[in-house]
Length: 245
Length: 297
Image (tube, rainbow over all chains, first blue to last red; front, side):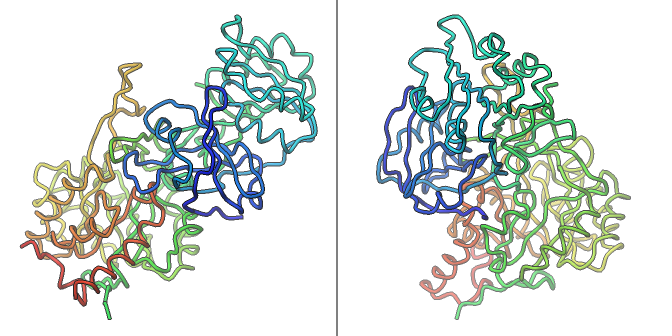
């Protein structure tokens, strides 16, 4: 299904852990959204901030979908303050979707939980390794357990990162398909830690984007076969393809 | 009846709104109805594929965006064999933007390209180490490149200028003297964004090109200066996001306009500009664009 560009109203804005959960009214997203899709979310009738923000689908329901916003700068701060009834510009769904396996391992760092939570809804069961800085930043662990995922968490304030968690539980990962979303340094470290298992690993990548439609060629990521655009060939890439040099 | 058609030294467009080079590719046809546009200029092509600059390549700026893509493209043969036949499915004027690192490369490129409404010569890209605005700053080089392109092709030739030249009017005059059919003005302004966490430029290549509403008054002044000084039509570009912006460009002397990074902010901007321009002209009693052009003078 081709993407569409529409102006859609926010119907719910609430906190979810340290993030803002925005639900947007849309009867059509459920018909088209798949794993790996993302949206370009822009501010209605505004040229400042000028660019829309690339955000993962978080939940898709019958008449609405939701996104999770982490405040990092002025744009995400404004987005997090969008009131119910206010409109957002939505371009999507974008990216190359994929069919997830029935079962597998998900590795999330921080807000990297967002696309993995959406993906888990398409799976029957699995394992989640999930790390954040602080305990109160851990979200959705109960929901993931309800989806038949074994959940293992770690926080930096308790002395470890998700990379440590994976290192300690490497036996659980053998033979499984692995899906990773989190900060760049975490991804780089995981490639080392996973070793030969990295062949079965896929990673959601994030880049600054202008358009989301392959027009501006901004979101290039270095791979073994040259630069690839995250918005066109991603956001999911085989971990073994991604270059960190 | 409002007549939005324009004739740029023989290039006939059904309306003055052209999608600028470098901001779109084929997937945009799903969102923008190309049949409604006056024309589209495909992203700059070089003789051989170029992989572009290392990332980060783009970031937001106040009321705009800065980029350093570095002309990533699949090369001219890919344009001719793969892109152009697909673009031809749309009922709009198609232009090819060409980028060479030498006069010979520009000649070769213009000899290869056929079956488009015109060739836009890129002597204004700020994001490459050879060619681009390094050529476009110098009226003598712009004259030579334009002349050699015009010698190689029967197609109309448009020269896209950089605002970085010391005297853009001189450069425009050189392009006109060499046989260009029209001027595109302007490409992005050179700019810099620094990441305060590292103290280093946020874009990997350092300098980039700024576009968007932030540059509109600057670009408009360049267009005004060129339009009053050269006889060939000027296609104005720089920060146009609304029909009001478009009107300013017509009043300053533009014959047509290009929409660039506005489509990041609002992909429907080109179509809305066409519709709202028509409504405004109806309301004000204008019948065609000639009545608007250069009214400032």
